[in-house]
Image 1 (tube, one colour):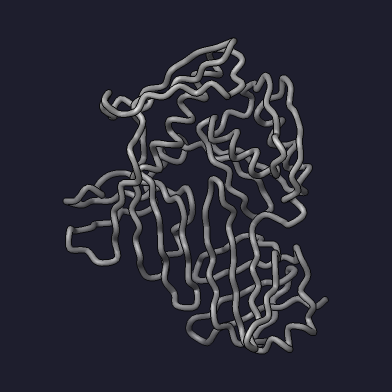
Image 2 (cartoon, helix red, strand yellow):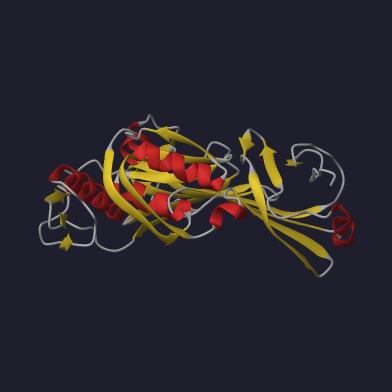
Length: 318
């Protein structure tokens, strides 16, 4: 199979490397959207172009690799998930998680470190791994992968450990939320109440506290900036084996829930610097003012726009 690269037009050149090689001026692209995200979703790439018949001869196959590069932005390696011919056009959907890595299964881990578990799942998925701001040596006495894919299992575990999973460039990347929140802001946005293209959302009520209780352990995490009149819940289903682990998981769970209760969506010209888990500061006379972390970005490379969703930084959980 020959590799392909697609170019839009002069002045707005977008390179697409197929199977590691670049070929230009092959077809006319009508759509190219990259979604850059973390925590429960994998990055994705959607390309639509003319001349479907020509693409049949190339024979794209599942898990072929594609990389998009445009004006300083690099999508990392994506894997072909599906090809859809329709109305004389041809659409390719690719994701940062290979199809072969989506297999569901059961697995138990006894007395393993977090790094051991991530490494085992990466090997099973044909992926590499890296840890950013995550304590890899923390001991997990026992946890089960419960008929779920490795990525879904790791995301569930990392959410308890105060981290997110990002599938990127052939890696399972574990990124600590505190680590991301403490980094210097990559950009500062000045927003007025009359600003167009900006929306602020409150997505439900934050929890005041979460208690993790098991037959062997009990611990409570509190968000000090949330009123005591808000929900205070107890979780009995997590397999925490000691108070230290229960405390970690209570803090992780509370952070995971509360940080999703406020978001800002910014629609702008193409902004190559916006990628998931980067820091952004907002200066504003509205409720959007403060420190934020990028949750998800949709880059429309054909129209050169970016839609960025941010979650507020939360540093008040003890």
